[in-house]
Length: 240
Image (cartoon, rainbow, N blue to C red):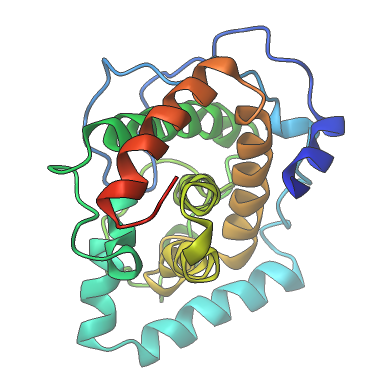
Protein backbone atom coordinates (compact mmCIF):
# COMPACT_ATOMS: atom_id res chain seq x y z
CA UNK A 1 0.00 0.00 0.00
CA UNK A 2 1.38 3.40 -1.00
CA UNK A 3 0.36 4.83 2.37
CA UNK A 4 3.00 2.76 4.12
CA UNK A 5 5.75 4.97 2.74
CA UNK A 6 4.64 7.64 5.18
CA UNK A 7 5.28 5.40 8.17
CA UNK A 8 8.97 6.35 8.22
CA UNK A 9 7.89 9.75 9.52
CA UNK A 10 5.86 8.35 12.40
CA UNK A 11 6.72 7.23 15.87
CA UNK A 12 5.15 3.98 17.00
CA UNK A 13 1.86 4.65 18.79
CA UNK A 14 2.46 4.83 22.50
CA UNK A 15 0.08 7.29 24.10
CA UNK A 16 -3.66 7.60 23.98
CA UNK A 17 -4.55 10.58 21.82
CA UNK A 18 -6.18 13.25 23.93
CA UNK A 19 -9.62 14.12 22.67
CA UNK A 20 -10.17 17.34 24.53
CA UNK A 21 -13.12 19.43 23.46
CA UNK A 22 -12.42 22.29 21.12
CA UNK A 23 -14.61 24.54 19.04
CA UNK A 24 -13.37 22.99 15.81
CA UNK A 25 -13.94 24.35 12.34
CA UNK A 26 -16.91 22.14 11.59
CA UNK A 27 -20.32 21.40 13.05
CA UNK A 28 -19.53 18.08 14.73
CA UNK A 29 -22.15 15.97 16.42
CA UNK A 30 -21.42 16.19 20.11
CA UNK A 31 -20.46 12.60 20.87
CA UNK A 32 -17.77 13.27 23.43
CA UNK A 33 -18.14 9.83 25.01
CA UNK A 34 -16.91 8.06 21.88
CA UNK A 35 -13.21 7.22 22.05
CA UNK A 36 -11.01 7.22 19.01
CA UNK A 37 -8.08 4.97 18.20
CA UNK A 38 -4.87 4.87 20.23
CA UNK A 39 -2.65 6.94 17.93
CA UNK A 40 0.12 9.33 18.92
CA UNK A 41 1.12 11.65 16.08
CA UNK A 42 2.87 14.97 16.63
CA UNK A 43 1.78 17.00 13.62
CA UNK A 44 4.07 19.85 14.62
CA UNK A 45 6.98 17.63 13.50
CA UNK A 46 5.34 16.77 10.18
CA UNK A 47 3.76 20.02 9.00
CA UNK A 48 5.52 23.20 8.06
CA UNK A 49 4.35 26.31 9.90
CA UNK A 50 1.55 28.21 8.15
CA UNK A 51 2.43 31.22 6.00
CA UNK A 52 2.94 34.41 7.99
CA UNK A 53 -0.15 36.57 8.37
CA UNK A 54 1.41 39.41 6.36
CA UNK A 55 3.02 37.20 3.73
CA UNK A 56 2.34 37.36 0.01
CA UNK A 57 1.04 33.79 0.17
CA UNK A 58 -1.54 34.60 2.83
CA UNK A 59 -2.66 37.66 0.89
CA UNK A 60 -3.08 35.51 -2.24
CA UNK A 61 -5.01 32.92 -0.29
CA UNK A 62 -7.37 35.58 1.08
CA UNK A 63 -7.95 36.79 -2.47
CA UNK A 64 -8.85 33.24 -3.48
CA UNK A 65 -11.40 33.08 -0.65
CA UNK A 66 -12.86 36.41 -1.76
CA UNK A 67 -13.08 35.18 -5.35
CA UNK A 68 -15.00 32.10 -4.25
CA UNK A 69 -17.23 34.33 -2.14
CA UNK A 70 -17.99 36.58 -5.12
CA UNK A 71 -18.89 33.70 -7.40
CA UNK A 72 -20.56 31.11 -5.18
CA UNK A 73 -24.23 30.45 -5.86
CA UNK A 74 -27.07 29.59 -3.56
CA UNK A 75 -26.65 25.94 -4.50
CA UNK A 76 -22.94 26.19 -3.71
CA UNK A 77 -23.69 27.62 -0.29
CA UNK A 78 -26.20 24.86 0.46
CA UNK A 79 -23.63 22.19 -0.45
CA UNK A 80 -20.91 23.95 1.56
CA UNK A 81 -23.16 24.15 4.61
CA UNK A 82 -24.18 20.49 4.26
CA UNK A 83 -20.53 19.49 4.16
CA UNK A 84 -20.01 21.16 7.52
CA UNK A 85 -21.03 17.79 8.96
CA UNK A 86 -18.23 15.49 10.05
CA UNK A 87 -19.90 12.47 8.50
CA UNK A 88 -18.77 9.83 6.05
CA UNK A 89 -22.33 9.70 4.81
CA UNK A 90 -21.70 12.98 3.02
CA UNK A 91 -20.06 10.61 0.51
CA UNK A 92 -23.46 9.06 -0.26
CA UNK A 93 -23.67 11.11 -3.45
CA UNK A 94 -20.95 8.87 -4.89
CA UNK A 95 -21.70 5.71 -2.90
CA UNK A 96 -25.44 5.46 -3.55
CA UNK A 97 -28.63 5.55 -1.50
CA UNK A 98 -27.85 2.33 0.38
CA UNK A 99 -24.87 4.06 1.98
CA UNK A 100 -26.54 5.38 5.14
CA UNK A 101 -26.16 5.01 8.88
CA UNK A 102 -29.44 3.15 9.33
CA UNK A 103 -28.22 0.28 7.14
CA UNK A 104 -24.60 0.22 8.29
CA UNK A 105 -24.05 0.29 12.08
CA UNK A 106 -20.55 -1.22 12.00
CA UNK A 107 -19.46 1.12 9.24
CA UNK A 108 -20.94 4.03 11.17
CA UNK A 109 -18.96 3.09 14.28
CA UNK A 110 -15.70 2.79 12.34
CA UNK A 111 -16.00 6.26 10.86
CA UNK A 112 -17.22 7.87 14.07
CA UNK A 113 -14.06 6.57 15.77
CA UNK A 114 -12.00 7.92 12.86
CA UNK A 115 -13.54 11.36 13.34
CA UNK A 116 -12.90 11.26 17.09
CA UNK A 117 -9.26 10.34 16.47
CA UNK A 118 -8.83 13.02 13.81
CA UNK A 119 -10.50 15.69 15.89
CA UNK A 120 -8.30 15.04 18.90
CA UNK A 121 -5.10 15.04 16.85
CA UNK A 122 -5.87 18.29 15.03
CA UNK A 123 -7.40 20.07 18.02
CA UNK A 124 -4.11 20.02 19.89
CA UNK A 125 -2.09 21.04 16.85
CA UNK A 126 -4.23 24.11 16.18
CA UNK A 127 -3.10 25.66 19.46
CA UNK A 128 0.54 25.64 18.36
CA UNK A 129 0.26 28.11 15.49
CA UNK A 130 -3.01 29.95 16.21
CA UNK A 131 -3.45 31.10 12.61
CA UNK A 132 -6.39 33.50 12.13
CA UNK A 133 -9.40 32.43 10.11
CA UNK A 134 -9.92 34.25 6.80
CA UNK A 135 -12.78 36.28 8.27
CA UNK A 136 -10.54 37.26 11.20
CA UNK A 137 -7.70 38.23 8.90
CA UNK A 138 -9.81 40.27 6.48
CA UNK A 139 -13.19 41.84 7.25
CA UNK A 140 -14.21 41.53 3.60
CA UNK A 141 -14.58 37.77 4.07
CA UNK A 142 -18.16 36.83 4.89
CA UNK A 143 -18.39 33.09 5.53
CA UNK A 144 -21.50 31.14 4.61
CA UNK A 145 -20.83 28.66 7.42
CA UNK A 146 -20.61 29.02 11.19
CA UNK A 147 -17.77 31.27 12.36
CA UNK A 148 -15.52 28.98 14.34
CA UNK A 149 -13.60 30.23 17.36
CA UNK A 150 -10.73 27.78 16.83
CA UNK A 151 -7.62 28.64 14.87
CA UNK A 152 -7.34 27.91 11.18
CA UNK A 153 -4.26 25.69 10.69
CA UNK A 154 -4.46 22.83 9.93
CA UNK A 155 -8.04 22.30 8.82
CA UNK A 156 -9.77 19.68 10.94
CA UNK A 157 -12.39 19.26 8.27
CA UNK A 158 -9.80 18.55 5.56
CA UNK A 159 -8.02 16.13 7.88
CA UNK A 160 -11.17 14.18 8.64
CA UNK A 161 -12.37 14.30 5.05
CA UNK A 162 -9.05 12.93 3.83
CA UNK A 163 -8.80 10.07 6.32
CA UNK A 164 -12.44 9.16 5.66
CA UNK A 165 -11.82 9.14 1.91
CA UNK A 166 -8.71 6.96 2.22
CA UNK A 167 -10.41 4.42 4.46
CA UNK A 168 -13.59 4.38 2.38
CA UNK A 169 -11.60 3.92 -0.83
CA UNK A 170 -9.84 0.95 0.74
CA UNK A 171 -13.22 -0.53 1.67
CA UNK A 172 -14.65 0.01 -1.81
CA UNK A 173 -11.69 0.31 -4.22
CA UNK A 174 -14.08 0.02 -7.17
CA UNK A 175 -15.10 3.62 -6.43
CA UNK A 176 -11.71 4.94 -5.34
CA UNK A 177 -11.46 7.69 -7.97
CA UNK A 178 -14.90 9.09 -7.15
CA UNK A 179 -14.30 8.81 -3.40
CA UNK A 180 -10.99 10.70 -3.53
CA UNK A 181 -12.55 13.41 -5.70
CA UNK A 182 -15.39 13.76 -3.21
CA UNK A 183 -12.94 13.98 -0.31
CA UNK A 184 -11.09 16.74 -2.16
CA UNK A 185 -14.34 18.69 -2.60
CA UNK A 186 -15.23 18.08 1.06
CA UNK A 187 -12.06 19.94 2.00
CA UNK A 188 -12.30 22.62 -0.69
CA UNK A 189 -15.75 23.59 0.54
CA UNK A 190 -14.07 25.06 3.62
CA UNK A 191 -12.17 27.54 1.42
CA UNK A 192 -15.23 28.22 -0.71
CA UNK A 193 -17.26 28.88 2.43
CA UNK A 194 -14.77 31.35 3.93
CA UNK A 195 -13.74 29.14 6.86
CA UNK A 196 -10.21 28.34 5.71
CA UNK A 197 -7.35 29.36 3.49
CA UNK A 198 -5.81 27.04 0.91
CA UNK A 199 -2.73 26.12 2.95
CA UNK A 200 -4.99 25.13 5.87
CA UNK A 201 -6.68 22.42 3.84
CA UNK A 202 -3.42 21.38 2.18
CA UNK A 203 -1.99 20.74 5.66
CA UNK A 204 -5.18 18.92 6.62
CA UNK A 205 -4.80 16.59 3.66
CA UNK A 206 -1.25 15.76 4.75
CA UNK A 207 -2.43 15.17 8.33
CA UNK A 208 -5.27 12.93 7.18
CA UNK A 209 -2.94 10.85 5.02
CA UNK A 210 -0.42 10.42 7.83
CA UNK A 211 -3.20 9.38 10.21
CA UNK A 212 -4.57 6.85 7.71
CA UNK A 213 -1.11 5.34 7.22
CA UNK A 214 -0.72 4.77 10.94
CA UNK A 215 -4.25 3.46 11.38
CA UNK A 216 -3.62 0.67 8.89
CA UNK A 217 -0.95 -0.59 11.32
CA UNK A 218 -3.33 -0.53 14.32
CA UNK A 219 -4.85 -3.93 15.24
CA UNK A 220 -7.93 -2.35 16.82
CA UNK A 221 -8.61 -0.29 13.72
CA UNK A 222 -8.04 -3.28 11.44
CA UNK A 223 -10.54 -5.32 13.43
CA UNK A 224 -13.16 -2.59 13.01
CA UNK A 225 -12.17 -2.17 9.36
CA UNK A 226 -12.75 -5.88 8.69
CA UNK A 227 -16.15 -5.76 10.39
CA UNK A 228 -17.17 -2.69 8.38
CA UNK A 229 -15.93 -4.29 5.15
CA UNK A 230 -17.98 -7.45 5.79
CA UNK A 231 -21.05 -5.28 6.33
CA UNK A 232 -20.56 -2.58 3.69
CA UNK A 233 -19.55 -4.45 0.58
CA UNK A 234 -22.54 -6.84 0.47
CA UNK A 235 -24.86 -3.94 1.30
CA UNK A 236 -23.60 -2.08 -1.77
CA UNK A 237 -23.70 -5.17 -3.98
CA UNK A 238 -19.99 -6.03 -4.01
CA UNK A 239 -18.34 -9.33 -3.21
CA UNK A 240 -15.68 -9.49 -0.51
